[in-house]
Image (cartoon, rainbow over all chains, first blue to last red; front, side, top):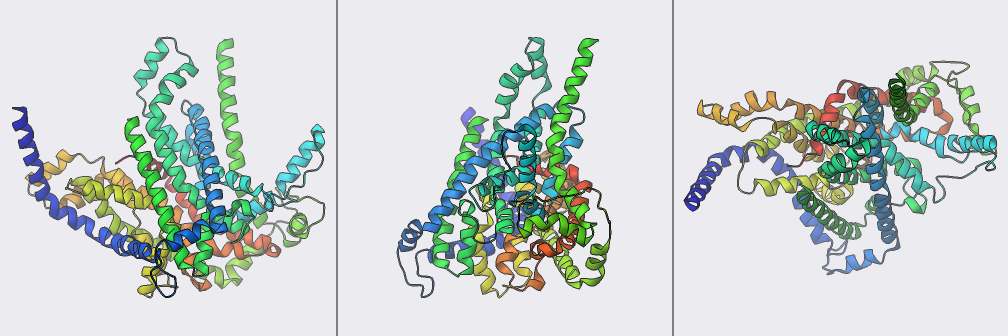
Length: 301
Length: 287
C-alpha cells in the first residue's frame, strides 16, 4: 500500500515537472545565459589558462601552481587574508550578538539599530579622509590616547604610526567592524525575534533568570543564524579591500597586503598565468568552505 | 517603588551603553559636514600637523570660526568634472539596477514557483556564485569583456553586474511568501504562467525586489574594484574612485565632495531602511 502510494506520488511529481519545465526555463533563461557567458564559460577558460604560459599559451602542466605556491607575495597575501578572516569574523559575530541581545528587549531598538546600520550606507570613499585624520601619526586617535595619558599619568605622549606599522592590520579590523556591525545585529535580532515567545515565557515561569534564558533558550535556538552570519561576514570580509586600497594604495604596509591587492597587481602587470592559477585555487577553497558551512548548517537544523 | 526606579535606571543605562558606540559610529559624518563648511585657512591650520609633520596634534572645532560655503560654490559652479563623475555614478547604478530587475526577478520567480529536476542544483550554484568575491572572477570577466571589446567602456561594469546572482537571492526571499495554492488556483482558472507572475508574483513578492534595489543601490554607489580594473579613462570613473584623488591641500573641497556623494546614499538609506533590513534578513535565509 505504502509502496504504491509512494510510486503514485513520484509519478505525480514527474508529471508536474514536465508541465512546468517550459515556464521554468523561460523565466530563468536570460539570467542563465548571462551567467554562462560572463562567469561559467570564461571560468573554464581561466582553468585552461592556469595550465598554460601567459603569452604563448603553451601547455605547462601544474607549473603555474608550483610558481604561485613558491611566490613570496602569494604566500604573504594568503597568510594575511586568512589571519584577517580568522580575527575579524569571530569578533564581528560576538560584537553583533552583544549589541543584539540587550537590544532585543528594548522599545527604542529601531533608532539604535539604524545608527549601527548607517555605516553600511556610507560610501567608502567618503570616509577615507576621516580614516586618515584618525589614524595618521598626528591624528585623533593618538591625540585622544595622549590626553588620556596626561590625565591618568599612565603613559607618555603616544605617537604610533598606525598605517605604517603592524598596527595597520588592526585599523582594517576596526573599519571592518565599524562597517559591518549593523548588518550582523539585524541578522541576530531576526534570529532572536523568531524564537517562540512561549518558550521564553515557560522558562521564566520555571524561574529562569535573564542569563539562564540566554544560555539555555536563546543561544541554542540561534544556530541557524550563526551559520548565516558567518557566511555573510565572510563574503563581506573581501570588501575590506576598498578601505585598504583607498587608505594605503596598491602596495600597503606588508601586514595588510591581502589577496585582493595581489590579484589587482597581477592584473595590472598582465601576469594572467599566475592570476589564473590563483583564481582556481581560491575558487576551490571558497567552494569547499561554503559547502562545508552549508553541511554544518543542515545538521544544525 | 525602589525596584521600579532600579529597573528604569538599569534600562536607561543599557540604552546609554548601546548609544555610546553608536555615536562613535556616526562621528565621521559630523567631521565631514563641519569640515565642508570650514574656511580653507582655518582648516589648513587644524590639519597641518597631519600632512606637514612636526610634533603638534591635529585639532578640530565643531563650530568653525569662519563658516563658509566657498567649497560648495566651487564644487557646484566651478568644477564640471564633478558633475561628469556624478552622472557616471548615477548612470551606472540606474542601468545596473534596471538590468538586474529585468534579468534577475524572473529568474528568482523561476526558482520560487517551479520545482524542476535540477533546479535545486542550479540554485546552489547560484548561491556559490553569489558568495564568490570579485577577485576570483576578475580574470574571467576580463577575458569576456576583452573579447567583446567592451574594456574601458561603462558597459564593462554594467553587464557583469546585471548578471550578478545576489539580487536573485533577495527577490527569491520575497517570492517565498507567495502561497503555492494561490498559483494552483490561478492555473485552474486558466491564467497563463506569465500572467500569474505579473499579477500574483510581483505584487505579493515586491518586498524582495525593493530590498534588492536598496541593497543594490548602496553596493553600486560604492563601486570600486570593477571600475579600478576595467576603466582606464578617468572620465568614465564613478565618484567613488574620484574622491580619494583629491589632495590634502584641498581638504575642505574633498569633504564637501564627500558630503554630496553621501547624500544620495543617505537618502536611499532613510527611505528604504525597512527594505534594507528585510533584505539583510532575506540574504541570510536558507533556500
